[in-house]
Image 1: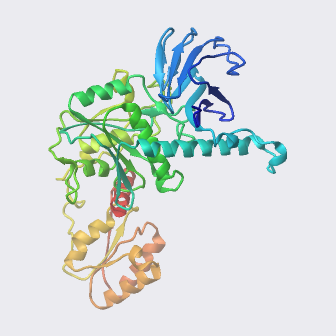
Image 2 (image 1 turned 180 degrees about the horizontal axis):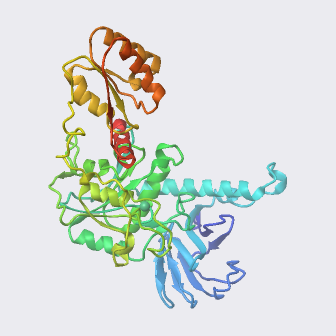
Image 3 (image 1 turned 135 degrees about the vertical axis):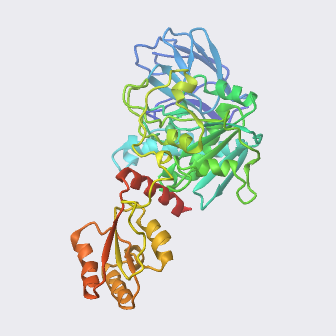
Length: 481
Ligand SMILES: [Mg+2]
């Protein structure tokens, strides 16, 4: 009986370039007319490929001397491997990447090149490419829905999206990983995926290592920042299908946490982990088990490594994964350390380390300074945004009866000046909780104090710029909650 679909190999970099595979016949893929591959590193019969439409599988046998790979796993000469839909075959290293697709025959006409006469754009290749990819992706998405093997849920206005495989179990030991650059890499070689199909398993032993963890009673969890979803650049529905396709490759139950916005859930902030381990409104994602921090760990590629410390020699784009682990008191590994057993590489942490702050440090310098005055006075806070002025003014001065004048609340400096004037006139002490970093700003308030013969003190925040940046990052995450 004729099948309603075709099995094709679709070139990752040019989806107009496809190779149709016949049912139950063996074809040679290589530098030949059939496969139209020109790469001299390919032999004419580089791979022998046999499809089975009933099983929806394809057997690939390596015949050429230069190794191919399937989903990043090397295929040696003489080796055979069974592959499935959406698997990626790299015919030779860094060249000729094809994705195995099952394509509906009904959709096929829109995949073929249109005549230029039908195309008003004058660019048949681009329009053809778009049609093809959309059609193929739709098919892929429908198929993924049918194969879904877990539950999706989203919380906190979709800023945290969680997938749990049907067979996932709560465990005391958590083996957690970043996704991009750790579990998967791009096929294109770009830092960021160019589309939803641009991924492959990052290291040959990823599945094997995760399987061992699963057998050793670990729960495998992925934590990934995907702010592109929050910004509308990636559709959540599409990304969910990508995650499901990745998990099918891993062949073990996995829980995935996706931070879609810049709030408390975005690494290095601890929100995703806390949602996993804490009993948040009776919705614990890991039962109510006590986590074994001794045995749990996190592995990620944003590790603050300088240039020339790893295979591709580029410096890490961020240190957020390492900081995530540091914030949570979790052991940390880079992907190369964990999957390739490489030695620990040097790394650079941000200059500011909150754990080095002393709780016993004096609040004021010099230590003999008085915090509040018995007599009426005007205090000018001075410091950059994030330096802690509002925290200080609220905690130590407002509670002591000072009127807090703040531009973030009042919106204009004129209103701040007005409130200062009224408050001093009514015999209250005032703290002006603005940056006040220039003479002109300070003069506005000093002149009012002079009118009322009120003494003025300045409280200058000695917070470092790095510390202030840290505070801003954290408060941004808290506010978004
Ligand atoms: Mg990453």
